Length: 494
Image (tube, rainbow, N blue to C red):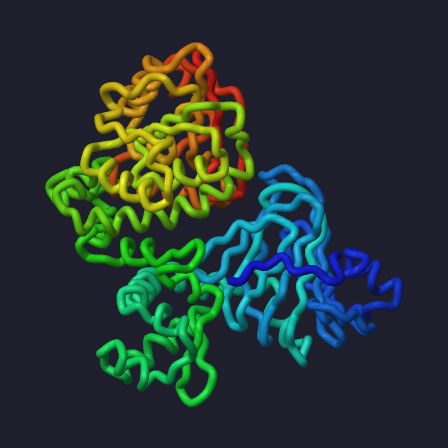
């Protein structure tokens, strides 16, 4: 899925209004009303007047829907559906609006203003997470009836859309392995130079040409790569993210998720026993904990670091946008891994000093990053176990995606070690996914299962984090929901 922030002459479709307003002003004609959320419908309309700019909509079909602020428990996904069209462009309004898009097997959280381009033939659905406003979907098709019929909500007895969605989920591991193989072969890096025929690609990569074509064809059907002509393939916005050097690259995450030596497949294949016993599958399959395994396997550790860098890249953007670090002089990043987050913070806030604290084999890799980015004189790397004690002297302590690795007793031990090192004026910043109650969707609920299988840890609700903090000498002062994969919780020592 491609997300941009392009505008038309500096503004959104003027005026950014509901389809009813466009119809009443003679700028569109109503065609049909199509079901959207369970609590409303949206009109499918055709734009009939000219409108120059990047969002050209002459003669195209638009769906406009007004999103009002409603309690989270009343929000629901639109039915999973596929449009029979060339492309769908969804323009989110410039009012405060956070949207979660399910695109095939992927979940994207998007904040307005933004344009989302959904490839043709991809199963998708959506849900409002926060805010209110409008969205307009521009449907690129010559036959509006095809879009209406395929988007219509089925009757209670019609299970076809659910069958498609569930089948896609059941076979989700197919996509993991296809993406892993494409990343391991470095296809996106080759295509970054120029589009290539499959025969040229196969020769350069040293692989079986017919099998490579079938792989690329399958990925292109999901918006990863595109086949142009004469079996020639090119990058798409999603395929760009598989390049090693792309901004926000997910290349490392793809390798980590599919690599047999990471034992994730073995562990997830033992989920039944984990649910039956409550014991993490990784230890049962490998004979040791994930962190001990990485310490003994440097190559696996490097792949893990690359995957965590993929996660941190997106998280850093959300953290820096929502938290003001200028109030502090010395940050201690507890369990800071390869140092990506601390490097991003210090690059933005130049007077700051930092301490990265992690196990000895981890801090060595972090030092190399700080040297490359010219931050070595501002960051001190300290080795040790956060289950025992952490460095003192910081006025802000960060725990990013640390507590979710551990059950409550170990999480409390980590928090108490932090509290012991902190002064009364220090602050603690927890960076974790805060689970929403009930049926509210969220990537954190899936990551929670990964924590169960791999580490024996868990994702938590706001109330559960508040309880951990109270038992460790803190009070939860503020929670910031970022719309990213992580949220921010600021805690004060008591």
